[in-house]
Length: 318
Image (tube, rainbow, N blue to C red; front, side):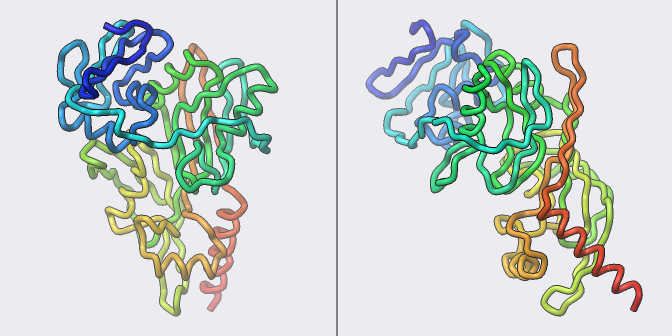
């Protein structure tokens, strides 16, 4: 048995951890992500799917499997040392932060588009966590990410100011006890509905409600667009983007899941350089306090809506 959360390898075929205060996360996937930073996330989830992860001798496959301090986590029949994912050391970087709220436990930002929350491959710009690290050093706290937004998604981002708050907030946000509301502009006409298409084999639920409909001329053809309010009950990777594309209404300028040609024409006409997806609001209770955070749309998204409004007013007068 290895004490203090350290690991041990046996002929490079197994690795063992003991969960303690310094490495504890409530879910097995989050624990593994923190303990094995050199291993790509895809490989960690494959370890789970293929039955190579054991907790106290019992095989577990669900990423959401709960763990407790004192548990023994083992990865069997896998050489974790063969993975060499680069893990960049976080460095503090002075950065302008759009702070919506701050108290002794957390700090809430309106994240801008075009900034990654964490360093990654082929990312040369400083990440948001590096900006927060600089801010934290000046103000006497260490920042911890408790959820993420895609690089080109803007809006409400909650960051914990100590490790224990991070554990509790991370678990809370991954539960269904947090109201998470996004604003999205999509191609097509969308009716109110609940989307339950699985994402990466896991349950995923998005509740969609139209706010406003527009018509636009793109490449000389009439195109319907819908501005949506999307509330998610689960938080899978790219869930909203995959769900909306899955019902035939991809998010405007989302080149991963949409039509590249259509997006290119929309970008030319409305000067939009990223997908139209924004985390507008998060509501939850934490440690006896009620929090309700809202983030305004960025100027680029406001401009798109303003131009569409003007275009539709002109069309109605004809």
